[in-house]
Length: 362
Ligand SMILES: Nc1ncnc2c1ncn2[C@@H]1O[C@H](COP(=O)(O)OP(=O)(O)OP(=O)(O)O)[C@@H](O)[C@H]1O
Ligand SMILES: [Mg+2]
Image 1 (cartoon, protein in one colour):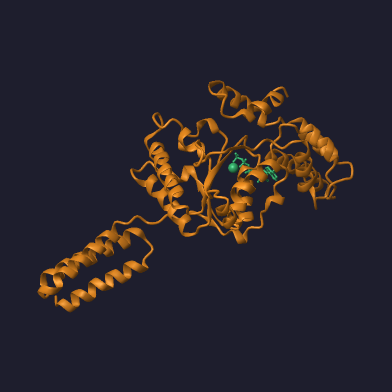
Image 2 (tube, rainbow, N blue to C red):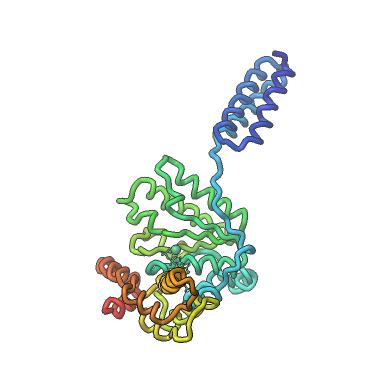
């Protein structure tokens, strides 16, 4: 084939590769282009050989690139969630405000006082008490990009994949900075690096590399971790400057339970006898998610009756009492488990101890 035809063919392959989405197809096209450039380097005028070899190399390197994973960056502007949607948890909100929101809003002021922006917060506590909710609200309040990294999706059994996923996530967060990266279920990374599975070990190491890199370059990226099992989070990740500053997200207290139930029942057909205070008293140890479920179940009783009788009726206090009698405070079990774990090391999470003394007695 003539030189010009070959060149045209190679260029066509490259153009096509830029358009196809399917990874394997793209790879094949680029490898074919690389081959043609090598042939060209042999048949072309002497001065051009080097250029074609270089093109072939570039095509080859491009063909070996892994497809980029996309990590659901939530466009914060589209989300309406704010701290007002999170009932109670005032201390948690205040800490997050100082550590995350204000630095993003007033970077100059923080620089003036020589306060470093960056680092992280590790939220821990029983399930369903608002960790994920508060992280999303924080991102909205800060008005920055928000990346949700679900740890079990980041890790992979395939050699090298985990590191690639993590570094690609940080690269995306850097590009979109200021950003928050939210690591949900952080305990899924494994604990003791020496005993964890290979992929978990590489994940922790890669994460440490990325986090240490952040400190050096001040890239305005903050990390929020969330876990139900703080004792299973690698100790190196818990250190200050990484996911330091452990922040306990407790089960809702009396006032918060009252607010949550009230908030949830707004605009629902509720009878006048439904007593929010009585419900809040009866639900010590319930998580926020439990309270939502409690209200839903009570509503369902009224709905079922209405379907049967073909006459809609309001949700009554009796419906709530019926649901409450069959339900146990779910966080109590979590505190029991936590106490067992903390027997091994009770220095780290003092707040669990404080809460559990009262709750485990329920
Ligand atoms: N303080 C709260 N204010 C308002 N809603 C809450 C609150 N706490 C919990 N909820 C309700 O419970 C649901 C579950 O909360 P969320 O997913 O944030 O819990 P979590 O602590 O992340 O749980 P897990 O540890 O299981 O991931 C929320 O979607 C919300 O409906
Ligand atoms: Mg969660």
